[in-house]
View 1 (cartoon, rainbow, N blue to C red):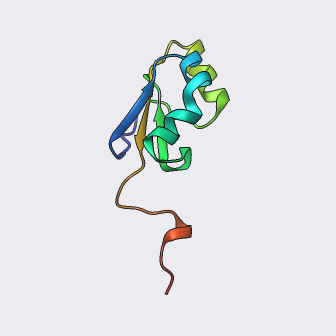
View 2 (view 1 turned 180 degrees about the vertical axis):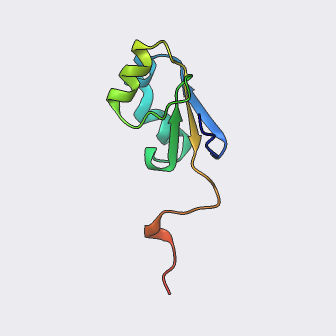
Length: 82
């Protein structure tokens, strides 16, 4: 297994149902978009879309922790160009 450097943990989804019911509001409350974060299940797998969260549910790998991406990088759209 490889180690992934992330930013700080922002919040978690305790269950698949929690993710289904609260995902949109959780990112909004944290003041970020899902694009700014990395979701990691309890088996160390990245969850990027619904199918990944379903696999976490099926494999008993919740809670899924949501971390801020590395804080030393910015999206290409906001980086200054020469």
